Image 1 (cartoon, helix red, strand yellow):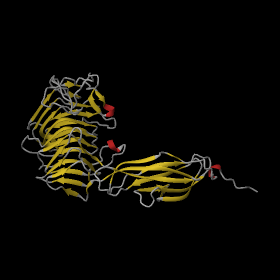
Image 2 (cartoon, one colour):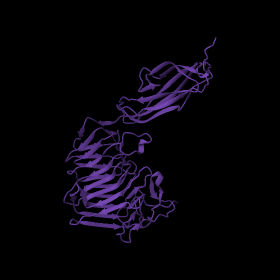
Image 3 (cartoon, rainbow, N blue to C red):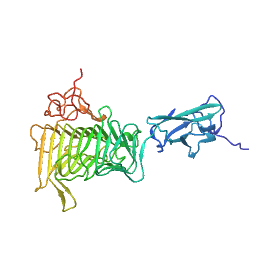
Image 4 (cartoon, rainbow, N blue to C red):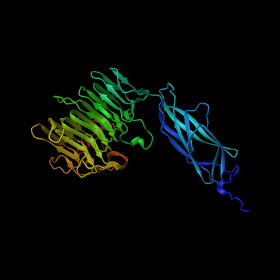
Amino acid sequence: MIEACELQEEKITFDPNIQLSFSTDTVFFDTVFTTVGSITKRFKVFNPSENAIEIEKISIGNIEKSSYSLVINGFESQSLNKTRLLGKDSLLVLVKVFIDPQDSNLPFIIQDSVVFETNGNLQDVKLISWGQDAVFFRGGIQTLPCNSVWDSLRPYVIYDSLLVPEGCTLEMQPGTRVSLAPGASMFIGGTIKINGTLEHPVEISGLRTDIPFDNTPGQWDGIYFLQTSQENTIDWAEIKNGSIGLYLGIPDEDEVPDVILSNSIIKNMALAGIQCISSDLTMYNTLIHSCVENTMLCTAGGSYIFRHNTFAALSREVFREEPSFVLTNFLPINETEALASALDATLENNIIWGRLENELIIEAVEGVGFDLTFSKNILKTTLTDFDNSNIVNENPLFVNEFDNNYRLDSLGESPAVDQGVLLDILTDLDGKQRDDLPDIGAYEYIPEE
């Protein structure tokens, strides 16, 4: 007679000294907007015993009214009874959170737990979310009312897209936060006034704030300035994680700036930090970095004044074959035709640097204006048509390019130190005072006391 043999890992133990272990003790969701479901997070439950155990019950803590939902080993349920877990085996728990509006300007905490009852033991994994009420724009392209003012009390969440119509103004006050969903854009037919401060910049980014999405390009589309747009100002803003930071397509007959951009950071763009077609842009004290294709792309002419900016194309995650900074007076339409207009550009005290041997394209067609002034810049390029005031192919020695810190090195050995021309831009991107021998780039080197 042959007796059936039960494997040790299948024998159930009721020993109360054996407890479950978990891949984490807390599942944390960072800033979940109300009425918008979260991403799915997961954790594992381990049986450390050689024998099987029976988990008498797995359930959400507040089972009557919880903001959290569970999927336990493939079963969608807020409670599951008598789950057998073999020796040295594990099971997977998925967690999502959906938060109802609280009518609160301040972020609030939503807490719960996943409770496990095993052999008389109660164990749990804590669930914590930061909830945030927001102002939502949904349902196709939403046209904003004239003379709208956004403040820092609640974030503004844009699904689809938003239009500032011709003749109307949108003002963003210090600390305004704007989140755009995948594929969403802002179209500026009128005027936008972004009025951040050093302490409270305006933040424009995607919906995802969890790692690694806090620094992932392409999570929304872009900010597009239409041909009717004028008198735009952007001061102290951080614009990140989209496809195109700013797109200017505003051809006109004057050289009045369509956009004045200052004291800002544009980063992690899937295409370009800024793209201009026959437009007029004045820009100072601004850092553009970690863009997949271009930090700056100016084609088909226009009028540009760039002073005390840093254009850094050094991201380790980005693999490019073409230079990151482009200035041309034409834009090919097809194989035989091109859009062309006069280009007038002044660049003073800028750093244009990257991983390629040449990070600068300057091209022109004959028959239209082409007037460039380069003075006191640091340039990474194989081009040779620059006067001796510019520093060519000398590493600016940033503090830590791998950590995206593009300040000048702390030993003061950067070739950018004290090599700029004195301009009426008295403070840098950190709000620090420039001296009578200003440094090249967006940041002034300040020796430590």
